[in-house]
Length: 193
Image 1 (cartoon, rainbow, N blue to C red):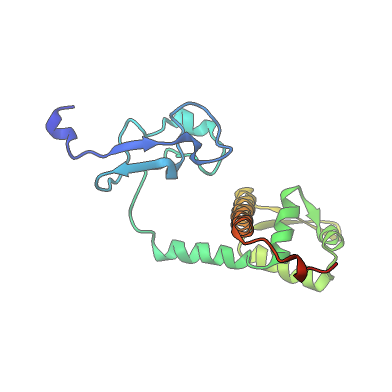
Image 2 (image 1 turned 90 degrees about the vertical axis):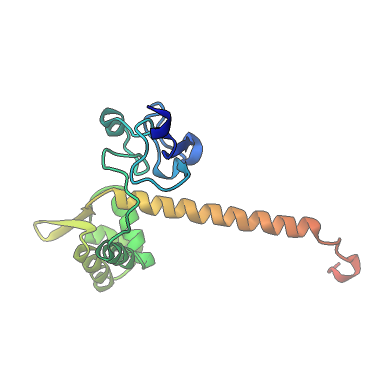
């Protein structure tokens, strides 16, 4: 590439360690957030960091760059509303518990009631919310209704949220340890014998 053509091009810094559990299939599979650009924003990464179609199909995590073009364009409001609707459907501990149980495999409504320890009317309401947002499938077999997760990627999102929570908890614990380490020693006369 001539010198004049490359002067305005962005350079990419790639960090493979940015995402835990990402498969190591060489430098062609890159997490989106691992692409840090110096200089002005570009609509697409340079060809040197764009993944090959073959390499991206080998990666089964939600962090890999696929063959979908990289875009820095604004997200449409309709997509934001869709995401908010999904998170709203997941905004109850019982519904999260249902999704986690169904992530292990198909269960009947009766099995869900038994494992969660909640009443039939309550489980039916929560399942109706999850069905309305198309997060679960249902099928009838005789007089039983069986439920399963429609797309396992939702359970991956829930697992990421658990990891996020655990990291925040570790950070809080480390801060408390620092506070305790820097605090003056307690006065022995103030403690119970």
